[in-house]
Length: 209
Image 1: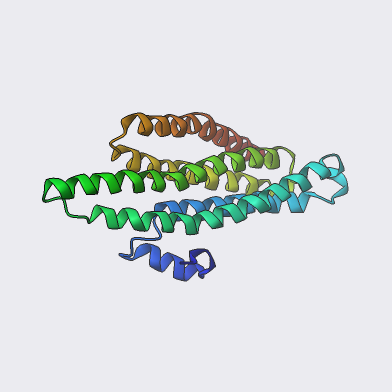
Image 2 (image 1 turned 135 degrees about the horizontal axis):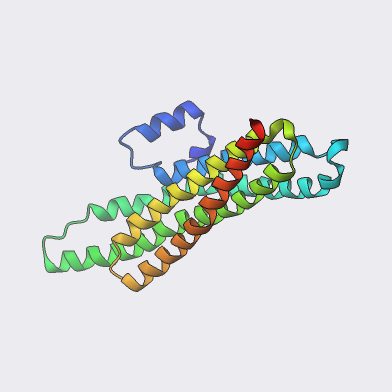
């Protein structure tokens, strides 16, 4: 599918089309990649500067982590499309007879679990990105502090967006115990990290006034 290698114009065009993929998960992963890249830029523009010598090593280490995160998010763009395709197909399975209904339920349960894996991973990596962006905002060059705040907005949006993909899939699961386990993990991330992102954004905005 290689959505991550398409031009911006091509990606937006296919996202807006009737095609089943890419969807919200892939879009969330892309937004998170952009958010991580903005943090990476702050780190790269801070490292090597005399006035920030005391945080030079930390900035370089954070940039290396961002390199990995960016690649992970782009990989998850592709993976999200791969796991959604079987789910879209399963939704179209017939359920006119008892046997057909049982088979559809069996297949749906399997593909719903698989479809939850990617948005959960996107959420987890968004949390990592938010923690790094917090460091970039606090210790990065004042000349690019707005980019750290912007990156935080992007990663918060991606975190919350990916959570909706988790919840729409867990809602359809028959195994309610497993569904609630996933829901609780997602809710825990939503409880901790959006407030962290909002606090950092507010701090950046205050410094720009």
